Length: 342
Image (cartoon, rainbow, N blue to C red; front, side, top):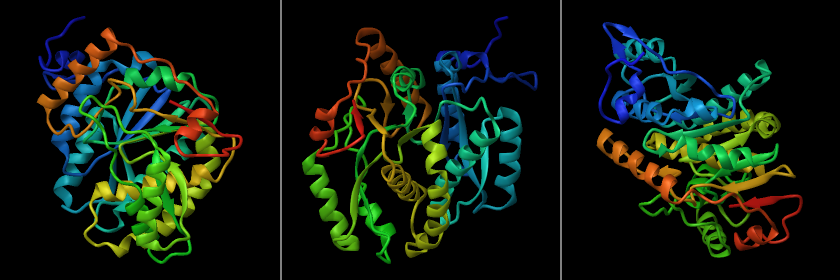
């Protein structure tokens, strides 16, 4: 039955409130459940991003999302009541026991991964992949499905780059922030690949922030991280441990923003993944139409969705290519039992 709805973003596929009755979209997270890190007061961002996701009909390819918000809020009961209403209305919020108060908000992104691991353990039919992104990034959820389906059981994906961490340093959080810069991405969504030069730059940045003992590893940035279900189960204990230490170390920077906190969590996840073997690293965000960066309002979202759709029709992204040569091109020489794909 066709119902009148919002006209922008393709009518938002008619999921809206009609005469006070909310019509939720179908839910299907058989392939991917994506956590989108948001802030308690970011109601507008969630409003247009939710409708942008609806317009993509991601349930047809097995993708669903949750907006991740901490329960310790900076603005008191007004946001708390509004969040409760939003959660009940749209059923797409994940309220984790984290803080949005600086500087301990670094713990909130990691709590999403802990929450995802708990979902995995409690639900035999949990998604094949879990992910984390930000509410300032618009993803083409249907475009993520084909490369994810082609990966093996132990897979880690995103716009990969070199990062560093040093457990022995008192300022490991500063080290991670220095070595994990924001992605260098073109307007059409393609990001610069990791390379030997990028690894050297990350090592130099880390040396200046936390000494020369920091070990380099490949990490997906805060904008997009994807872990397969078996890999998340493997690294969940390490992430819980890292979260406890990070919540303490994050007090080093009282002015840290939520996005900087997400960068710390991204480095911690990448470090946990790098401690295992047999992992397939897949670089996404390198093909057209997967990611739109810095989207901050509904008009930009509508333009980005149109551009993504045109790219997929005119020039579908090629399948992932995997091999040792890709690892060497990224500056990762002698990688054993590791697959690199782009």
